[in-house]
Image (cartoon, rainbow, N blue to C red):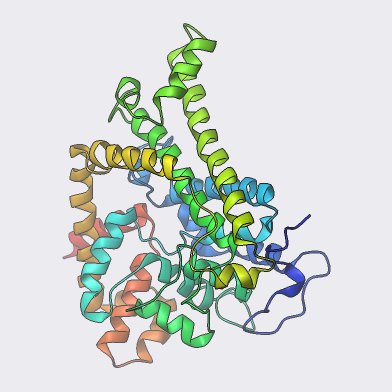
Length: 380
């Protein structure tokens, strides 16, 4: 049963292009399915989460991360009486706009795009689902519902001030009310991202040998979990011990969000999704105590994983790859694949050409970008 503040499919604001709705799928199920079948979603399989995709088969990619976010989102949405289908759609779409090589690639592309309005992966995700996926006969993009587009645009909260150009362009096509908070489902998708990456980055960092179990047992969020496992399963195999401990940490984060959000939703007294949007604060959050522990964990991961010397060496190389590809194609736009040529011929503007090149590079996988760079370097 839905809570009164849930987003109901039969009250959707609809799609930008009217369509006859399915007789056996809700509008948000249909959004989810279109996202799963999108080319951009498939490419997430070969895009970095932290480690470059080909460095090891056991590390997370953007695709496995998105699936884990969706799993957390369904759990949280179900516990809070929210729409699980909308939550899942947003969770699966939230990273569609990421470049190859994760945030390193995004930073490099943003630097190259600085004269042309910059680059933002959240805005790019919206651009993909509204414009860049070109498979349907009657429209560009995926023609998602207003609610899913709103959630992709502002799942991290209201977007005000100097908007990324891609977000401005999308919002000009359909008003997403960027100044308000999004639905509770969108907020669940956002916090599910936090839960998922804090959990799996610990797993991946340990597997990569960037730190060990003793190192993370110094953290206030982690130590009780290892102590509980040691008390219940003395002498447990090291890998099983680690897994048992970290799944408890995962459970602590999920339970904390559920308990805290239930209290905040009750205090807000919202009786509709519109009342959720009208609030001046988010309703799906961690508790203050857990947030302090998560800040400690994030500081640890930043130093020991995201800025580890071995990771930084790779970051430097892949940043150079993205910058070199952008510079090459800005001067050689007709060297891009044929499907881009009509769009290139339609503009005499360097600004628009740069944005086309940005779309092309942002859509690359890690592997393709590295192979293309090597081939172009050999040719040049």
